[in-house]
Image 1 (spheres, rainbow, N blue to C red):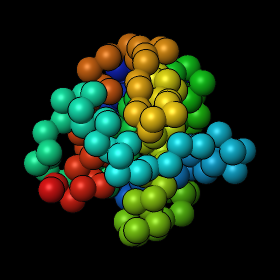
Image 2: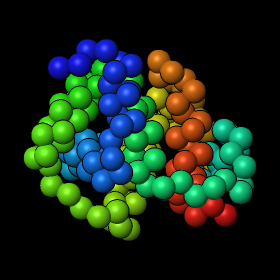
Image 3: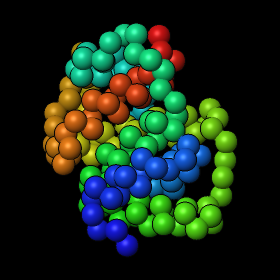
Image 4: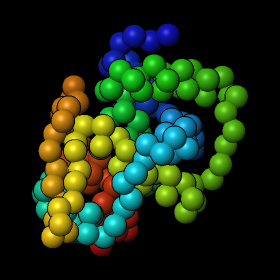
Length: 161
């Protein structure tokens, strides 16, 4: 097993598109079933993320696999997820994981997973007036990972508009 965070990040970056989405689905599915993924994407949450993290309105659409890899990389910064992600990568490289196409269902999984990953580092709340606030509760080892994930997520959802 890999113990080096840089090597795990490299391995995540080298995942092919379908494997990245499959692995993220495998990581997030148990959390969804356990009710841990409580935040849902809404247009006003997207606007608040854009404003908070200075994401331009015309952010280019991000391929789903890029969002998946970025989300896996952020989750891998957390010791609770690094081991399982590493195991899944090792399992995937053995060719034993099922495959599925990138479709609207996997886009929904991606949104849920990305929001879950963000919530592992940022407290996301909405006040009585409907305003969103974002407070870092745990900065990832590489804090530069948050904004690129948000840009890719917003681009995925908005389709680059």
